[in-house]
Length: 373
Image (tube, rainbow, N blue to C red):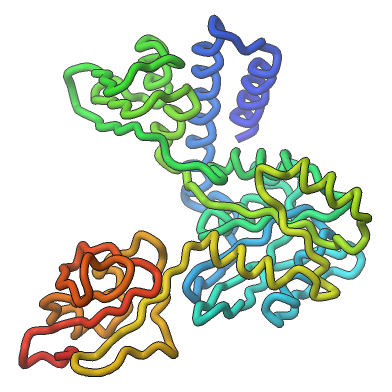
């Protein structure tokens, strides 16, 4: 294991020493591919018999999960307490959380699980400070909430630790499809003009992942990092927000400076211990999670507007059926929809119909079933 870490360090240092330009970008891409392949090998070894430390056992619940990520002592535990009422145990001598503490935030009918996690320290992605377990939990979250404070405003190293763990923040997967074959060589196709990679670069990077026979198709202009991510196949793409806690300790000039420096993330400034800014933060969390509210209407009756069914943006009628009793899903015949997603009131749709916020839905089942009609 030590030799893998040493080789990764050597390659990272070579990247830092290499000036980035048109002539060197292919070489840098190949170095990044080597690093990614080495990290995958390290992961495989850690997952082997008896390999790797046991992770935190966190049972997901609610409609979505939010992971609090930050340095030690930035007030994540206080934030959890004031958002959810859950008490997070801290080690008094370090003011750091010693385990992962869940709490439940209620928002307009949605239950949002908030996870207070130990603070990340440099080297977390390589296992320091139980960082691998913490990052493993962050990988499964629906939203990452970076928690900063006036003394810890620089969070590029946090992004770096997540990046090393295969967590891509506020990004989408590259439009690159990859298929392997047993023979026939490697074929490279593109539906667009590639300006960042030559075919030779693509083939060299693919070789680092032992892809010698297969097909790579680019559906957008992509760089070496995009190709490495697609070949690695273990990246997760998670939306993120930034909250700056203890904002009561900052003057207005400092607040303006923080908003400018972090404008790409539109930070929310709060003072959790004083319950300041938490309403805005809750709304921002809910918007980032893209909740939609669906109201069920039994046939021939008024819809139940008091208790919406919470889904996520992009969900279809099939996703709605997953939240209903199994016998209804099995007997599903069609659905009628009133609201933003319907072309006309009461439109009859199938399982693939995409729903919108505040749609009203009647589920129709075959007669004789135990469904809704």
